[in-house]
Image (cartoon, rainbow, N blue to C red; front, top):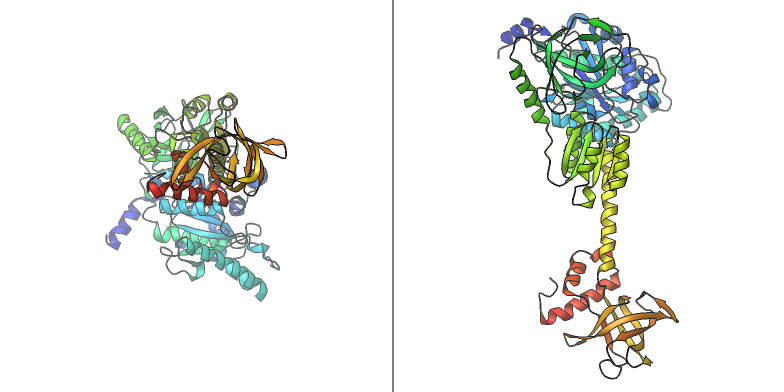
Length: 602
């Protein structure tokens, strides 16, 4: 495409606001960073200062220019500003979809300059890779470098150069640690002012959400990247039927169930017929009201909504309409307008089909708060080779317990509940039916907890198998220790190796031929009945079957008879679960058998 033609395309259409997603590990300062940008204090009202819900914030170019000062000249830009999506964690980022890809045009990955990459940072990087979303890194909390001398809201390059040599060295050490971690994840990165080509290198922007230092740089880089590399993608047909994504489904006083949404193409108007992705089938309904927060405030914190007649991409809006109870977070929204409603339904179904999680006949039940969360969780489970039997958006209900209890494997009688509630009667039923519930709002923790549970089940199963399997042992009848010759024979023995248990069948070998002697009934240690004896111990045993002086003699070496099937399990599956001396006795026992049959126990 020639440059002339590109320019024509861009000028013929209206440029929409680029959509920016903010991701990062919990506590690394995502919300504080946005607070600085929008000059509000949303995090003050949040539990533990961690964002609990999804919202969006429109920051017009005029405000960006004001905050960035000399770094942004509004005359250099024809994009209208930036629309920030504030996510409660990277999982919601993958919820934000458009045309089968990520809804965000660009992302900011927030990393605490002191902590570097944490588990959720790695998860966020994986999602950015999977969705091929361009991103920059905000290396936050530069003001916590010991000895830092703050000056609010100045550019970070200026701020760093104004510090003492020691402070600058300490900070650079941390910054280059993050650049190294990006390199380990497969990304070439450097400080943003050294990056020549942002398409092949990740820019790292040092910032402080506390002092505002570096915020001008962050906004400048975001605007610059959007203007330079995404201008053509920002061209939208303003008059066309709107397309968007559901961020949240919530009850709003006076309106019932509403949708918090981002419109990324066209226009949505009051009274428009829309199709929205639902739990079972797409919902066809009519827009009753469009509610919009003022710029620099958030859908979820500003209760004073403005009733507007239309909303044009890209913007956040609250949609009030009938029959939205079954709408799904992460689902597509499409305005019908002059198109055939059946075609639009098919379009929505097609997009939902792209997000469908593949399930198997045997596996876990997975519930998540949004389609994107479900997709991210399913992808991580797939990487961990954990099968899924059912995956759905929504709270855990009794029917989910009923599905989970049908699993054949004990390890699959479980439900992973990601960022959703468990209904009271479902919790009671889960206890009753012994279905294990795992609840968390961090993917890696959820999977970690489940894997620990599987490990404990497998260990218990192993112990059970070990309990029921014949253990190897060899022992010698001591001289002058015959206490009774027969019915049963009672003799003193020394355990030469392994674990001798009561009720074991006993053999002795004539060459490589085992000869069954009888059943060892009891073990006594200093007159006390015991269940077992180990290497080196001397005990009295009663053996049903032989007579001392005929079938057995003092000085004989006797062995516990191990059934061939048990020998195979011990050698192939339980080697690590038995002691070294048991392994040695087992090896000797197998050698004797394999002298006459090389395939015995294999």
